[in-house]
Image 1: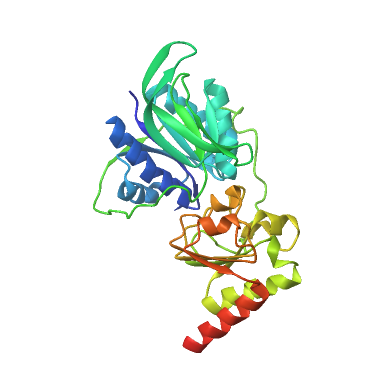
Image 2: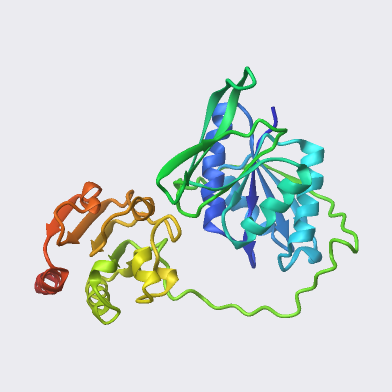
Amino acid sequence: MGNVWVFIEQEAGKIADVSLELVCKGRELAAQLGVKTEAVLLGDNVAGCVDTLFAYGCDNVFLAEDSRLEPFTVLPYAKVIMDLIRAHKPNILLFGATLKGRELAPRVASEKLGGLTADCTDLRIDDFEDKKNNKSYTNKLMQIRPAFGGNIIATIVNTWDDPQMVTVREGVMKLDEPDFGRKGTVTPVEVKLTDAETVIKVLERVRADKEVDLKSAQIIVAGGYGVGSKANFKLIYDLAEALGGEVGASRAAVDAGWIDHDHQVGQTGVTVRPRLYIACGISGSIQHCAGMSESKKIIAINTDPGAPIFSVAHYAIVGDLNTVIPQMIKAFKAKA
């Protein structure tokens, strides 16, 4: 049985949070299988990332450094990873479901003629009984993801050749505390690229920072379609400002054009785990709850006492948010 691999996404030497989340999950899976957790780190002058990867649980880092690997383009990355797969035959390969991961993972899977499950929200190891073909499999990766618009949860098993490949959404895997006393090994990788893999050249990069960082926010005030209008979203901003939090939204509010997609929480948005999540005028669809149900404390405000959001809320306020929110702001400022 091969090891568990994690593709490490980095930008200017800074590792993406989703990659560290996957290292933590990969370590858990590897422990169940009795194998090692290994990272695949590509770029130029990225050796400084290695100690961080050890701290989060990697036993070995495949380090490929070459100027042709910066900035990211999919062809050279896919070539290097495929060369590594052929040489070392991993059992599991995890990618983040980011723009880079969603471009790279399908190309690797296509080249390998292997299966790929996209946008997983959970992973576990279990046995699988293929009743149709009368075959039994042990220690397979259960690849769990929402399907049919989030109305069901599908468990997918890849019985093709290894590696079992998945992309995993950001924020859904728990990030463990790092242990910077951990050490591992580094396996240098010889980068062999031809003109065919380097045919694409990046002439210019234009970057724009997101206006909001919901993933790291400790307090989130989110508005839904029940807010009523774009103008009325000022109440959501006012409460978030009073509490020192960020503004989130449901898909319905985003689709209505009341707020930008960067603020969207849920299956098609961001998965968050703040200390406090206040849902205002949000009905609580399965898709939305999938992105916020693990918040430490959830307060829901809705005029409908039967709203599904109350089933995941720790505190339920049945009332008009136009009345409730100003009272919350007044009460908080009185105690501040």
